[in-house]
Image 1 (cartoon, rainbow, N blue to C red):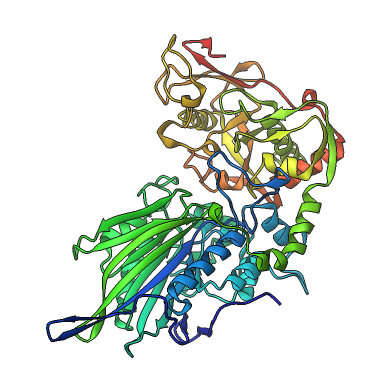
Image 2 (spheres, rainbow, N blue to C red; image 1 turned 90 degrees about the horizontal axis):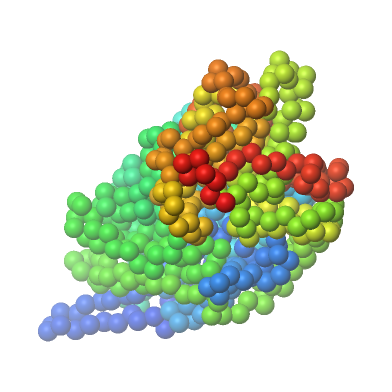
Length: 600
């Protein structure tokens, strides 16, 4: 049984929410009474701790590198470090004066989470308890919002994980597609006992990302809907206040920037946390997630009330812990929030909690053994170091595998005679497959997402538009101007995973031209591309469902799809070949030019 250091009293089926009551008050938090003239003012302070975007990081370990996690900033990852920080805060504040919440993306992101979804699945009869459930139960989380990546392995895996958690998974805007009633608890309420005989009721409203309807359409279409965060917060916050909430906190798997990556495919904002703070009265603080950025404290003024709402986003992968410190005062027969201050604590400042290390050692060791299995031999080293701006053989490997799988899948269909094009992105700037033995972790490090493969029907004109959109990734650079590769890409903050190669064609990308007019010399089998030509387009499910807002692909006719991860297909391909030789899969399909002259 997992270690449990918390006082959880269960969920209320009647309300569809979770409710708990703490035990006796612990002393260290400041719980003063202040005398002003003849009037006594009762005060109470408490702290809400928060994490987000854990993505399966239990330990400070990089399964892709087979060693401790390291980055240039000296960060450390893992719930084992968070556990140490949490216990420090509880000792400082008094356990009864704290809550611990999370803003989502818990069960996807590392080989650890993949292993317990696919290799030794938690859904199997008599299957294991998910390591993230074990760790979070032991640490004593009070509530966790759903993230979009919670849906990557399907509803069955998510529901099984939910059943293993001793805390609720919140999603007020994850509703049943038919009834439009919440499919998960919308909120969690907890009463904190104060020294004054007057409990403080804290409500946590959980909101997730509407993009789930796009990114995991295969799992949720017709089953769940995901309305906008703003409208659902406006619905639920007044209800929580009417139910007696003295403090309302939102745990939102949504960034604070107000931007979206899915264009106009859904009428909602992807990163809506600041909008919620600005538009919905009655919120005191928002734990922000999804964007993988660090926000120690951001203060947003509510348009209706003029009151301040404090936002904070701790860095992903358990690298930071947010603290919301609340100061309350008893006025006019109720508790009122006088102030909220947010701050961050750094996981690199503490050691692993030995109890969490002991709890999950066997699971960790099993995954390390799995990812170090040798599946083939590479004749040369392959790397992604230059893959953002040069056609790299290591990305061609992905494209070749995808095209082969799709061609075989459609071999007995009416689409068998159509040529297959294949899309792939340079996900990582540091991935490499060494010369010599190739392991599962080498290939997993190349394809870090749990994407699956889809075949779509596209025309030459649509592919041309697709490539033009992809080419917006490059910063416009005049002919003759110096080229700095560190400043050449990510125009308008577009991430690397939203830049696509397309294999099966040849083309130039003229970065001296304005966006929309960069694709030159686009050819298929040596001849100018016919806009009416039909192609089978091998594409990952994120892109096929509209992720990144690439034109046409989201609405294109789907010919085939599967549930096997692309990185598993890569491992199968390498295993079958035995030898990984670029001569069998690499080709130069594109290059960067300026006014027709090659950049490199």
